[in-house]
Amino acid sequence: MTCSRCQQENPAEAHFCMKCGTSLTLACAKCNTELPTGAAFCFACGQPVAAARKLSSRMRQWASEICESPSCAGSLWHEERR
Image (cartoon, rainbow, N blue to C red; front, side, top):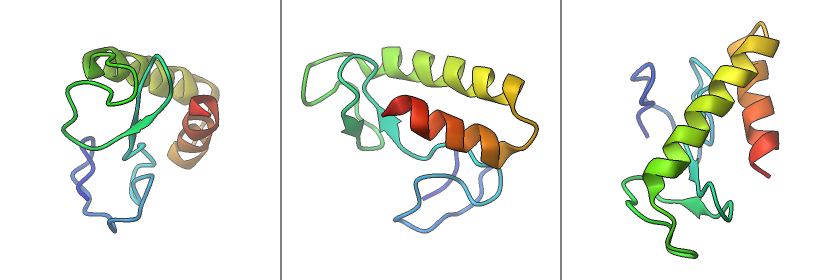
């Protein structure tokens, strides 16, 4: 799986990029269902994925502001999604 942020190729089972720590999975902003790459709508509740992308962008920004390393920010992002 290729990271959308740094273009690093990662193993298919990876949840975070090995190089920059960016989340490689997408979750629905409304119901937190993990979504496959390329999904336009959540298959569980119908929420548009664009809303999830906006949330993930804000969460990455928040995590990067309180962490000094990408791996820390990735860990916080993963925990916040749960």
